[in-house]
Each structure stands twice: as structure tokens, then as C-alpha cells.
Length: 236
Image 1 (cartoon, rainbow, N blue to C red):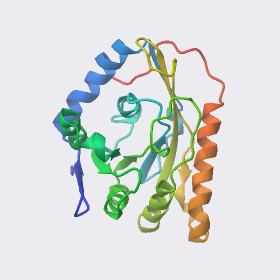
Image 2: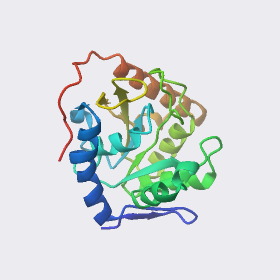
Image 3: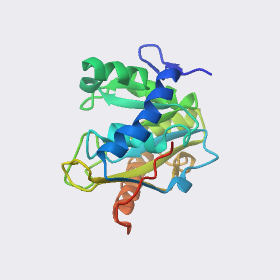
């Protein structure tokens, strides 16, 4: 199986042996040790007929980079997860080493390059799964902030060349804004947005409409009634 996506100027890969070590370690040791509870809701919303998935989580903490893939990565999602990561984060020492070998590729979040966008499209075209935090930064106030427009444009372009792309909204919430020791965390997965429904609209309309639909879906998840944060739903 090919675990590498190469778009020419940018390359991302998932080392199988490293994934086999890190996912169980994080699910069985790191997250259960730090968090008082880990709750995952909405796994039944993951589409079974999608050729490619673009996961769009809210961004509330640096912990999201571990919590989200542990909630949706293998074996939940059968495809390798690739991540669009801030260029600063992707180049930081040991952290950068792991990011680059677990599907991460760099992007300038303030001014994404054409190369980064093309690589994101390539990931989807090759049937892999892509994770992008659509708010573009961490916001600890618990409110959804304006979504970056690039995600919608990228997704629609990928759908035009590779039909079957779905965007999956994900709401992440913690028991405290500072994500302190033994607080709870909840990952809520919403119904996917199939991209085919946006292709019959003019280009100038399709992307803003998709961005708004994604924002509405994320807000709906945030307002959903929830149970107290107890136990752990992490796959093993």
C-alpha cells in the first residue's frame, strides 16, 4: 500500500510502523492518563460511500492534534490521515519530525501557497483522508470563529477532478478552556457534506455557500444536548 502522497513540490507520508506504535500508545496511555474522560459521539455519521474524506474540526487546544486523529484515525477511518499543519509547527525539532512522518505537511496559515493547496487536493484525489482546522488557529473561548475560505475552494476543486469527496464537520470541546489535568474532552462528529451538490453552482457562489454550510454544521454540533463527560470511548 502506498503511504506517500507526492505533489511535486510537497510530499507527505505516513510511516506504517510509526503509526502502529503511536496510535495505540496515545489511545491506551497518553489520553486516558491526562484526561478524566474521552467521549466520542457520531461515529455513525462517517459516510461509507465516500471516496475521500476531508475532516474539518474546530480548534480549541494543541491537544486537538492528538485527540482528533485518535478519535477518527485507523481503524475508524480506513485511509491514512494527512494533515495541513502550520509551517511553524511542522518545523519544530522533534515535534516536526513526528509531524512529517505522520501525514503532516506545512502551510502558511496567513497566506497559503499554491503548492500547499495543490498538495491538499492531491491527498484527496489519491483517496487519502485530509484533516484541516478551518478556523486556522486555536480559539479557547468556545465560540466558532470565521472559517477560512480556502478549505471550501480546495474541496470543490478536488471534487471536480475526483468525485466522491465528503467534508466531515467535527466539534471538539474540553471540560475547561485551559484543558487542565484530568478535565474531560468530547469529540462530536456531524453528518458529512457531499461535495457533488455544490458543483452545479457558479464558482463564486459554491465556495461561500459551502463555507457557510460547514459553519452551520459546526455550530449545530456545538449546540447539541450532551451527556456529562464520563468514561472513555477511544478505540483500541
